[in-house]
Image 1 (spheres, one colour):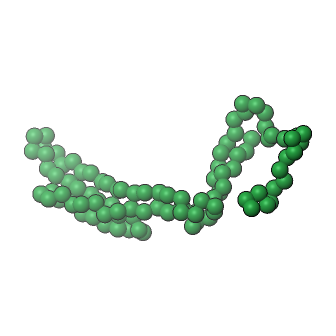
Image 2 (tube, one colour):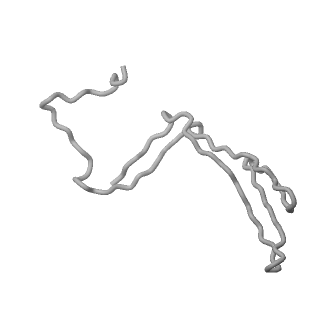
Image 3 (cartoon, helix red, strand yellow):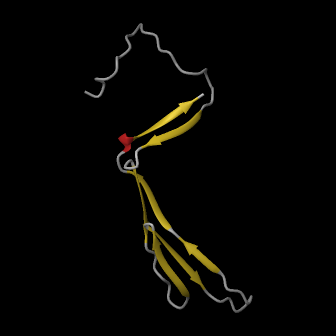
Length: 98
């Protein structure tokens, strides 16, 4: 079963907690490279503007520029749409240190 590697405390057994009550601790994470997935998607290029879309190292980015006639400027916009999800959460662990 799920508890085969631990010993269940008895009703009179003592529990020992690390640290003191209300103590704060630093949190870290240790994980295997297969634990999480990061993905990007291509964004639509809007019509009527100058733009470019490139994929580098699996990351898709879009740059769009358009002339602003009222302020005599050329604003630029750089976009990335992404997602991050645990694929194999058993390959990651959260660590607390005092």
